[in-house]
Length: 74
Image 1 (cartoon, rainbow, N blue to C red):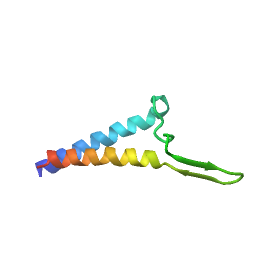
Image 2 (cartoon, rainbow, N blue to C red):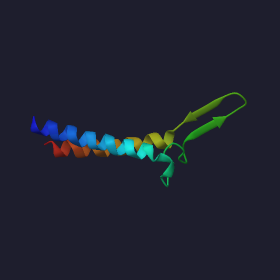
Image 3 (cartoon, rainbow, N blue to C red):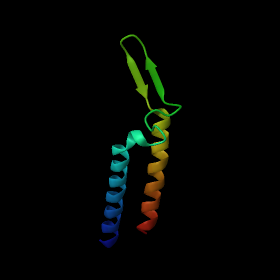
Image 4 (tube, rainbow, N blue to C red):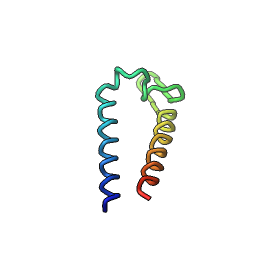
């Protein structure tokens, strides 16, 4: 049970950190929603946006976090 508590605290702190990043999102030196590799098509009355590069970056980041959590809980 102790490991579960530590994991929940870590996840809570991580979510808080991400929340603070979203609050100050526009002041960051990089645009997480508008990376090179994101697909953006704008026609007359149609807009298609698929954040491909952002999704890959987020997937790598979350994978590293979950690997770290799994190693800490062993």
